[in-house]
Image (tube, rainbow, N blue to C red):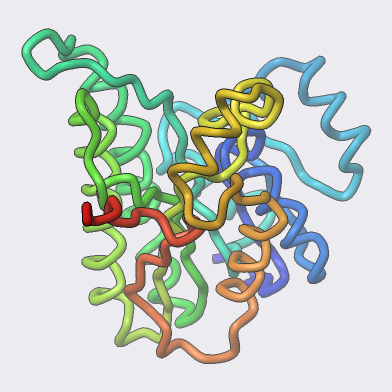
Amino acid sequence: MPTPDHSLALVTDALSFAGPPAVQALLAVGFRVIAVDTAFREPTLRDDYRRQHPSVVTMGEPESSHLLVAQVIDAHGLPEVVVSNDSHPARHVPIEVAPLSELHASLDRLLVRPFQLAQALTPHLKQRGSGKLIFITSCRTALPQLGGAIPDMARAGANALVRSLSIELAPFGIPVNAIAPNFLYSEAYFPKAVYEETAAGRAFIQATVPRGRLGRPDELGELITYLATMKGSFHTGTIIPFAGAWPVAAPRPF
């Protein structure tokens, strides 16, 4: 095994959802960051990103998480921090007409992919006896929405994975935690053009989220920084909601 590098961090889906704030937060506290994204298979996009982030190592996502881990370890060593940031469009459709292809696609990106990443990393982390795994999931399952069975199933499964994996890695001193956003500004889920730049979008957020606005990426970065740099390993197995106190019960009628 290559010499461990305790200053190395890996971020998946680096261009979407929590990827950008994760990269920025980890860079700010001194990590060397490997940013992985399918889009980096395109040379123009990869080169543009490198010009904006010259200290970040970019990788186009390979076909499997096992291959990703093997390539990272071979080229750079075993990361100390891994942020499994998993995103896929949350398409709402009634169960009776939901295409199985969408179910398979959502489960593959939001559940199978992080499972395989954990599976590939676990033996290396156990052998080294250190590391921190941070999963970006969702707390959307706290209040299921009509037609949301597919994304709810996938996110609930990912949260269950975090809890189970934390039990397996706790004896080795390796904390496993999740940050579970909802109403986080990202172009993937809550685009600015809809939820910040239209009166209807702003009104919806103000009426739905007790904090009265979308969560900022830098605020999410604060949580990532904490989980990536905490000294102890007792904080493990948690699903941390990041949703501005959502959900809240509807007011009771007088």
